[in-house]
Length: 403
Image (cartoon, rainbow, N blue to C red; front, side):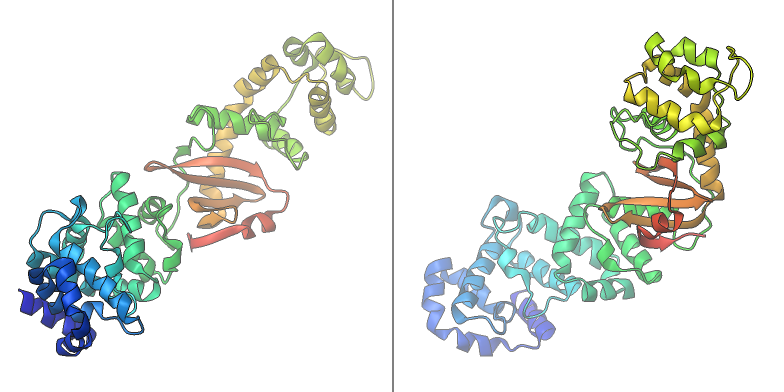
């Protein structure tokens, strides 16, 4: 096994073992003292893998010691295999990742340097890639060529997927998907690998997108679909966001009142608002001609002054918000779902302010609807009128487009 391992490494890197044995002749005694004669001999068999071009001789010796620690099983994370298997796993690992002379990760064999790089991880990666011949696939060759230190990135991706209960081989399918559609590999990171995996299964590139199945939890506190829907209704229809974010574009209120057919009679407002609140807005209900009555309806051109007066005087009370929500929240929800079915400019994307969350969005006229994955479900995060539709669509960082 030692001879086969030495031959494999020599062939992989085009190096001659004897050349590096000669190079290190002055250090053999030091090596034997440091790692023991028997282990020193095994290290010498792997000299081509540690004698990296352009690295000082002392650094090469340090790498040899690290390799000796790996082969001897020093450290709890590296226990459980004999040196021959360890050497074989290392060579197979390097076959998967096609490590070059300048990037062979021997310095990471020490578990203290990179805790993820241990014997179990090496064994698992070798099985996942070589037993399925994934390491010879065109998509993998393209990926490891394009991504610097691909093994480190793959370890991070794998840790994230396994921690979230996914299958490590799903990473293969995601990379193959990106390669198939000529999409940048650099978009795939540990922070978004699960979301991109869900997106490529639920909304593949250039596929016909039929719409969103439901509202999602979004940024609601507490996390629930009902809370998120209520919060966005209050924010965009009444400028009463429970999270305290005032609308930047106040005219959105008028657009929603018209879109949803919102009507508010004087008597309804008087039943919900306290006396001081009603006094602050009563005149806004007055008809252009004739006497005021309980059935007077708030004119559309008074919607913005009405909301502004309630907010300015602290009169936007809970009964008013509940009354309006009970009547118009469901129509708002349904309009968002309808927009998802009718929207154009559909895209799977990130945002400039959030490169790790994966969204699906589009626009139905000036109504912009955006969703993200909440677990396995793609749920609407928000729906609103865009003040500048073109600018809103351009602000997205495209991962891929939908039909």
